[in-house]
Image 1 (cartoon, rainbow, N blue to C red):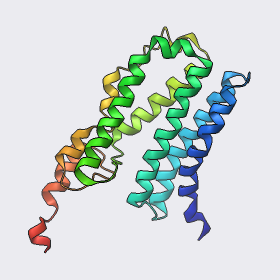
Image 2 (image 1 turned 60 degrees about the horizontal axis):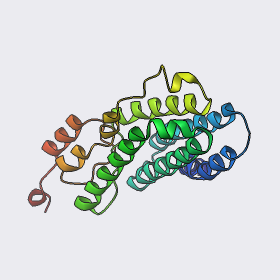
Image 3 (image 1 turned 30 degrees about the vertical axis):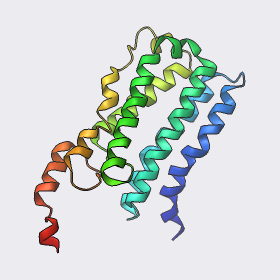
Image 4 (image 1 turned 90 degrees about the vertical axis):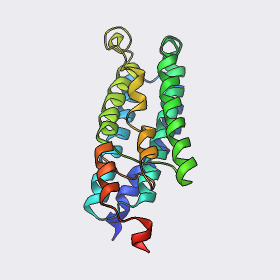
Length: 197
């Protein structure tokens, strides 16, 4: 049925929103309009997984596409920051570099071990999405709170949501693993290759 394509459409919408965000950042539109795009992207990220699980279409491929869409959208967000708030890029470049390095390490470990990207979707990953959305909104709206009072989340958080610990600890590609404890529990209860054969 057509509604089963809605989760995929929501995921793809973030990829579509990425160039739109950059294009609008080049204009003189008020920051709240750009922040609205961030909120829309966050909501699509929230509901694509919920609906996919409810309608039974939550495949590993869709989960990996979800991660790719997130990376593309937030890379576009960095470009929007540079266009609208270059002061933030200059002052907090270490934070963004830490975030990008964490993503690269995580995906490199997963690709090295499993020949495919990771999509762990931990609880901490979901928390990180909320924090990231709030920070992006504050920056885009030009609020002083985003720079002076909010105190950007410690860049170490960037290592946690998609930590390579998940990829190093498991025997198969980690897909939708809420926490490292869940992963280890799954590994203990999963049949070994010898038993499966």
